[in-house]
Image (cartoon, rainbow, N blue to C red; front, side):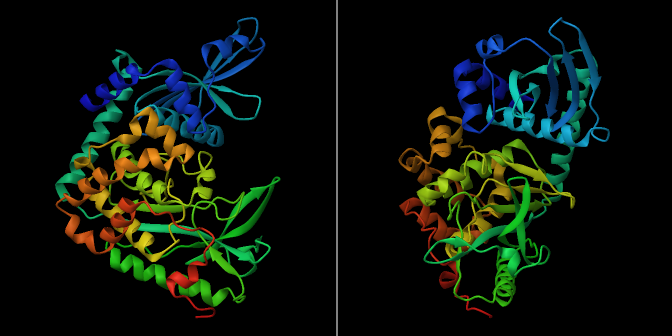
Length: 413
């Protein structure tokens, strides 16, 4: 609870304009008090979303007419699954962006079909009634799970599903991955929605997970080989990164199981992995954010773990991919020892979303030194050290390159 109270004090030090700016930097629609007053009167559909430990503990919908009449109802995860999931995800993202993990976020349905943040209450657990009890119960359950995890000291299992594009040169025409790959399998295709129609232009590798970095990378090479056997057109260029072709952002999602999802783990991944990669990223890939690749972006998975979705596709080179796998495992094992949070400052937060490498670069070396001092570093050093050296140099990758040459992949292999 002390950590949560410190977060509330940090939140209180932010001015209202700075809070609004951070939300908008992360791609969140937010309305200031003056903007709310200027809106035309009429029906208002609002949601009070109470979040604790990165999940909703209660959501209430409030419909208010221009005449002041109100209608309230509890929103259920089972009875309204689509709306529940959308408002829960936005409320979690809003609190996280403001440095919080607990609190109430008030959302209002907007004309765009989405939701806008209109208020944040960072400390509702002080409530003496039923709501306060719900917050305390959530916190106690979360703390018990963390204590159980520390008692057994399990090594996290890591998985991934990085993406790449198939491009016909010299016209830079994207060739749909679905032409060669099925939707399932270790090498498949993934969908995007364009003009209301679902298409499958993106290739995706889904190697089997492992607690051992070397084994996971072996699985990755097998997935690459499966892709190569299926993609029969050897003239196509394989491209990875953040956005090698305009309008099609790529992700390098990391999957975790055997480790409890916490805000502090997400912040450690953001600061010690996403920030250094943002320094290395080809500047043309920064357009992926904030719609994709926002800080702390995660999804819970059916296998009981979660997927960290902030990173671009790290298939740009073996050094980068191996280093990402190693650092992800190292951070997951020891995140409670990693205390630096440059992204909590206004300047660095903005620099991440706008791709200002010169602002982020001075923080990279201190972050890398923290990682090097961890007790578990030796286990991951073989793959982590080369990437850490790249990060310190700050040389950007080139998203126009054919990644097959770097991975020594031959057509039909």
